[in-house]
Image 1 (tube, rainbow over the protein chains, first blue to last red):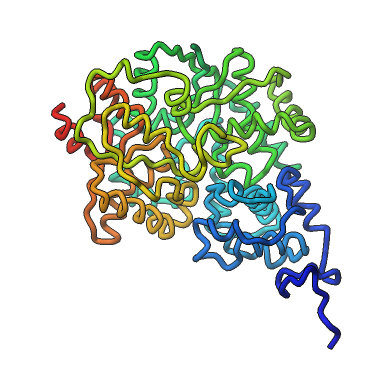
Image 2 (tube, rainbow over the protein chains, first blue to last red):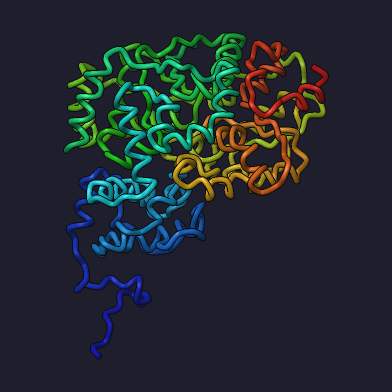
Length: 193
Length: 288
């Protein structure tokens, strides 16, 4: 067996492996809006994983996820449950000594995953959320619950809903921007790009 | 001092008391708020993860509208604040600015070169003004746990006015108000925020840890500045109690409510009666 290429003595999973590098995925992530995310600067120190809110529930740590993006292993990344466990808390981004923004990378990958057809509760929720924000410009939460969880969620949340309504914290009428039609049209077009 | 005030979706619904208390406290302190005209949702932590352009356009739209009013933008909600501040930073980047401007111009909104600042109500109260001279009713004997969560102070290149690791602004404000502040080690631990609905079990687990620590420290209430954190900590508190078979009944108050009480404003005028978890233990302790 040929000797494994090693880069500054890094272990196998951190190795910059020329044969497996597929720069297309990295480019895609960067063009999605990750150009400020400085993915290339990652030195695999793992500070991001050390501070991550949900690290113990993830199948791919933020450190590994960044490496997989660099290596172009897009299948592993897009199928990872970690994308949907990220709470966008920015602890990783805040602590990275190299200025990498793992939360922004994950955000870009999430958008790519949705476009690639990945489907689960999180993608469904996120898409409905954006659809409803686009519709009126201001979120109407009862509609979000109804569209996402159906009748069951409405019944489950009924007690809280009534309490909120009695406290004047939930109006039966949705608020909206001045020109919701235009608002929706423009953002719909922007999302198609 | 005058700001363009951006309430955001939550402050008009589930966090109504945050809206009411912000407005009355600012008025009391002589800071004028003019509501941002035709504001829209900032997209939260969700929108940019569906489409980067849509997320950034949503956040930048409010910034552009504030530019039109020629005023710095003031947000109470940590999420709205963070996303708007992020948009201001994005507008300093040529490529991002081009992408954002193209979308907003189709809506008939122009982006001006004069970039405004985005401020959070905690930042203004802690760093711009001295509230100590206005304290009329010190909150003597009240033990509070100040919870900062994530978006108020992280990441520092977007926020920058308080430490992302060990923030102290709300601790200081609470102390000025006369309250005793407990050493809440989870003050920047995430409550699970935006994944509440699709990953409810995970979020309940994360939120429970926060409630557990606050209770173990003997805090009378948690003080915070984020409606999404309040959704998890307060609105879902009864669900968490049920799931784990525990009882907290821990009042969750916004920082502006605490300050309002110390300024001598009547609880009813601060919207304190609008909480789902009763804040009565706090008021009783203060003898109000």
